[in-house]
Length: 349
Image (tube, rainbow, N blue to C red; front, side):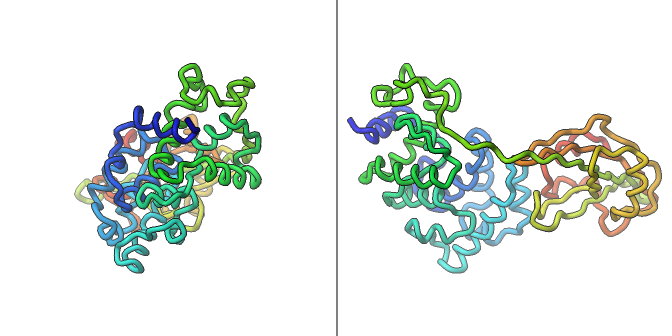
């Protein structure tokens, strides 16, 4: 029995009952694949179900406001995925009358769709023989064939793409691709893989050579950048005693583009009250401030892929409210970073 046949047999016997497994509809497969980029299945599944409920077709998604899409995405991280998702939906509706491209090449033209995602959609929806290569596939192939090329190097990416295409079952790419991804996620796991009961153990070179724990190989990670965030949280009430705060929208191409946050003061090092008070009116939209109080004595460390945000929240009393004022009762309507969402849940305005 060949490598691909063993993968497919294992898949038929062990595959999880996931909501997108019962369909070959391109919109739903595309949506699931975008959500599952850099996201575990357990975390991504509820988001998939929420999106399908809110936007049952690509037409509904294309017609939605970006803030509505970002709000639904809140908590998944890597928000460029949500913006690309929205842009691609508009393209499908505007340029293809709501019908997704029916091959790998056409799918690649959609914003946010790379080789892996195009291969997954093309093979699952149209049974096109395009091999998928994601983290799970890298792990299975590197161990089974003892490939020591770094998976995040140019040489490694090219080598694994060619190898994946060669060992794929070209007659059953739909089942094979889903099978090898599922096998990597459930059986050939990063740590403590179940090698003793592995259906591939007879041919696995890494198992024979005692190198399972050493593969796949990765080059050194990008250095993590440390940043110091100081969020100014205005607190004030109108004449009817209705509580307000202030939100501003993040611009530019950095993290959390398009999301909302409290006025931010970024400093080179951890800031103290004197520095915050000095910078407050000069570098934030807040004016006529009263007492400023630190909410959390120890910075909250929010870890992103290549940067760690050491964050303090400063509660700023306001005498008046202006154009950026938001009733506290409406905060939940705004798409915010999970760091801000967690604070809102904790702080009693």
